[in-house]
Amino acid sequence: MAEKKKARLLRAISYFVLLLLVIYVLSIGPVVAFLIDAKGNVIHPEYVNGYSAFYAPVLLLIDHVGFIQRYYWWYVNLCNGSEIHIVYQ
Image (cartoon, rainbow, N blue to C red; front, side, top):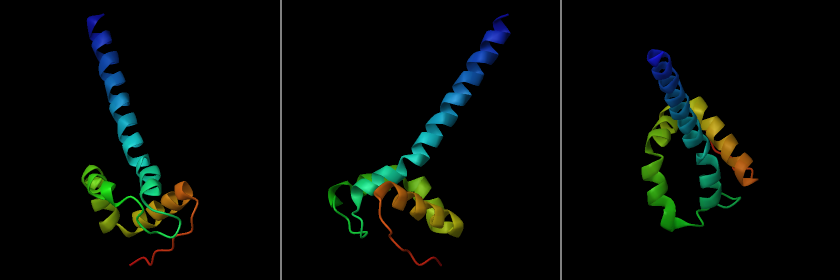
């Protein structure tokens, strides 16, 4: 019986960690929407360093994987209500 409780607890912790990772990745869109205006200009430069440090793993992935960059800007445009066009490489 104790092993079932441990297995349940481990499963619950695993789901919780997975949920936190999903929230972390999805939170980047609203944060970028806060930092830039509809034309792509930075309106809160005092928070850019914190943003870059907190989202460094995601930004590294965005910079090195082209199709993720496309979806990143689509999501930022969705959150910001803008039409920022980025030339993809």
